[in-house]
Length: 196
Image (cartoon, rainbow, N blue to C red; front, side, top):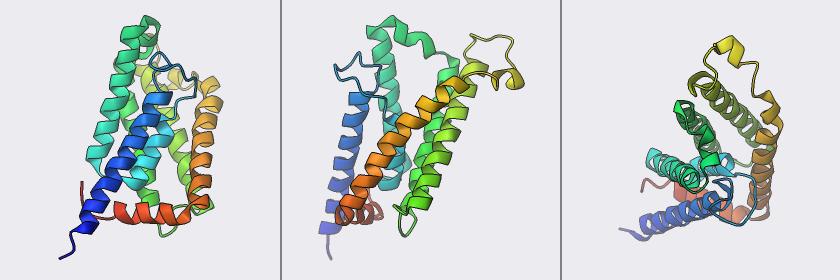
């Protein structure tokens, strides 16, 4: 019985999770937690997490981490608390859209096929934008007269940066997987192992 594969797969997943957590900490929290001023990479990181880690427990851990960063940033700088309303919980399905796109990509024979990768990335990012924007406008309490039709009129000015920054990270990740195909395939193969 070969036990090295599950151990190797477990360590691989822990390393991937640690890298994702590091970049989430580095880019999230409106930079009150770090001195580095990079755009938030959370959406791209969740897609990558879905691609390599797949299981719901990992998704839950990253949602908890993102939430802890947001509430920690708000505790340090009260301006950051502006979005922490009932509408904030709409981020959960927005994040799930990214994670599920990654899971779907992970099940493809060639997860870096430019067509599939681009469509999955763009559709999930757009879905995450619509979900997060609309839940904020509908449930934050800051727009008491906003119904669904009224809420659909707002927030679109944020779409270019929302899509653009996420695309920037996902293109960089795609280029990395193309530059290091053996590493990508090895990690993806270990993702298929039924562990952690």
